Length: 251
Image (cartoon, rainbow, N blue to C red):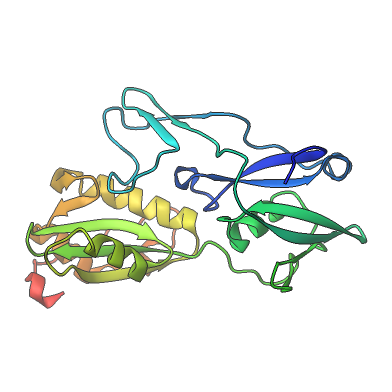
């Protein structure tokens, strides 16, 4: 499809998590101008590294669009405007407008992008003819914080994902031993999951072995046993009360 007379927008594949990469959307130039659709990302995005010499992304993931500079910044490269696309229809201001999205973009990503600028009376029609109203009760970006145990290295992975079972399967393909999910904590949003994950990584930083893997120390095992999502509902994360450690087999 030609990009002539089409405006191109880069949006987050996983809303709120730019490290998961960007996807592209195309819409008629005249319509984009009339609707005053804001542009958030243009070209290479430079993001400060909050922990120089440390990697804030999962080192097990191969992310070719991220070029790290461990001293100071990460550089997120937008995708090339090519490949398969899928056609959506936006019903906005009484008219229908075609929207062409990169094939790998999810409906959730597109809806989240629309919610960032469009009125609530807008409707999105998917390629499967499903109608989604922005004024409805749309639940997006639910994510989970998980703890996965590797008995061979005696390590616990603290991570986040929207599909923990799928993440476990991905990790299992490169592990000679059976990995075990110790606990999964549902979060109200991806942003909340990111905050909780960052908090846990910092809290147990002294146990870090590599990336998101931490030594299965009694302190961490005890914390996993006692914690639940209610710990993280307040703005400031609550500290659990001290308690004696437990065996990993009891988790």
